[in-house]
Structure formats: structure tokens, C-alpha cells
Image 1 (cartoon, one colour):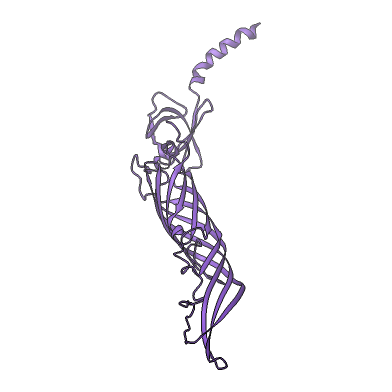
Image 2 (spheres, rainbow, N blue to C red; image 1 turned 90 degrees about the horizontal axis):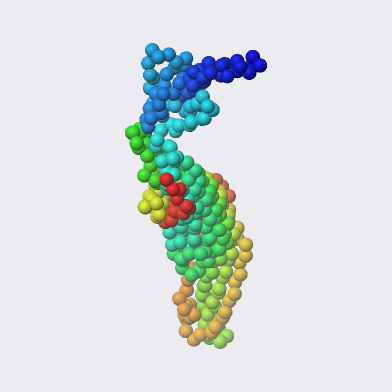
Amino acid sequence: MKKLILLPLVIFCLIPFIGKAQDVMILRFKADSLKVKIIEIGTDEIKYKLWPVEESMPIMVESKDRVKRIILANGTVMRFSENEFMNANNYSSQRKMAVKIDMFSFLYGSTSVAFEQSIEPGRSWEVGVGFIGMGSNLNNGGDYNSRSGAFFKGGYKFINQPDYYLKGMRYAHVMKGAYIRPELAVNFYNTIVTGTSYSSSLNTTTNMYDIVKENRETKYRNSAFAFLLNFGKQWVFSDIFLVDAFAGIGLGIGDEKKVSSTVTSITKSSSQYNPYYYGSGSSYDYNHYNPTGTGFATSTDGTVYLAGSCGLKLGILIGAKKMD
């Protein structure tokens, strides 16, 4: 009975001490923690008193960007960004995914599509796929070459940050700015090269000229791998459209094999010497390798060599915007 009477009294006596329980503040670049009593958490500063708290003790002030986290007496943990520039909450209302198409690839014989996802301020990853042969014929030397295949790319983007931070500074958009993107790329494709040649000789038996037309078709198989460092800049407009221009350089290795070659010929007699009896002749198999539209350029002889790429991507931002 006496214990039941003493329990409320003990609790009543401890109330002043419970109300003044200590908080813990952990600073950046310091291994130890501070035992404090938090007075106020402002926009830029945190006010506190060192533990144990006495009325005569001065109120201390610490810059918010120097505080890693605070553990309140009730167990609540509050974490703070190193600076507002990298605070993800400042970009919560912006779209963080984009679908892009490379206009350069389309003009040079392929269709390249990429997807980018922002991970955190200043960081994102990007993957892409290209369909070789699905584009214009500007890259293949006319109607004599045709290609089919694909290339794949994957990279991690580091968006540039300023050398110095000012109060309130932040990205205009979390996916906007100059960047460097390390990237792995690979391609596989077949090239079919066709050409026509003519020859003419005098047949002494008939006293006529034999005009020979030869149609040649050669098939090549190409594959290559490269590691690239892409340098570029991305602009975002109204959180809807974007433009991404880049150029990359690195190391790569490629291989080209002749798979097959066929020749068919047609002979016709003529009373006149005319090496182009069937129409204008065409050069065959000169410089048939053209890396444009294959994702990147590198060697084709199986040796490690320089690799390069460039592009101009247009895209749209997707994903639901987080409401404030």
C-alpha cells in the first residue's frame, strides 16, 4: 500500500527532469556527438544549449549545413542536407524521368531512344537502345549498302555543381546542367554491300563486242564494344521538354567479318564498244565501313583503339509531379 502511494510522488518529482531530457547533435566531419538541449531549429541555424542545461549558460548557434543529424529526446531523428543546393526536398515538385530520341542517329541510318532517371540532385542514370537500319540513308553511301542490327548503351551521369554555394542557391531543374557521363556501349549489325561492274571485249568469231555486267553482293558482320566519357549539357524547358547535346571519347574494340560474297553476270552482244551498255557503272566495295548510325565509332580489326560518339537528343519529361 505504501508503494502505491509513493509511486505518484516519485513520478511527480521526476517531471522537471523528464522535460529537460537531453538531445544529441551530430556534426559533419566530427566523429563524436554533442549532448545538447535544442532551443530552436530555424531556416539556416540551430540554437541550442550544451548539456547539462543551466540558466546561466549562453545559447549556442550552429549553421544548419554543418549539422548531419539531430536525435531528439523522444527518439525522433532529424537529418539535414549538407547544403540546400543538394536538398532533394527542393526538387520534389519536378519531374525526374525523361524519354529522349537522338536526332543525329535518325539522320544517319538508325533510331536511338534513351531513358533517364534522376536519382538525387546531381546524379542520374541513363540507358539507351538503337535500331540500326531504321533511319535515313545519309550514312550508307547511297542505295548500295544496307544495314540491320542494334546498339545498347548504359551510363551514370554526374551533373556539374558550382565551386561555391550562395545562400538559397539550387538547380533550376534537377535534370538540367552540364554533365559528364561514363558509359558502356556495344553494337551488333550486318552490312550488305551491292555493286555493279561492266567489262567489254571483242569477240573475233562474231566480230561483236561482248558486254558483261556483273552484280556483286557481299555480307559483313560487325560487332564492337566501347567505354566512353561523354561531355554534354542538358536544357529543360517548363518541366516538359529537354534538349541534350553531347560528345564522347574513350576506348573501344571492334571486329568485322566477311560472311558471304556472291557474283552474278549477264552477257549481251553489241556492235559498238560500250562498257556501260546497261547504264552507268558504279564503284564497288570502296570504304563500305561507315560508323555513323551505329552508336559509336571505333576500330574494326580487333585491336583496342580510340572510340567516339556524339548526339543531339530531344525529349519529354514524364512521371507524376509530387504535389507540395
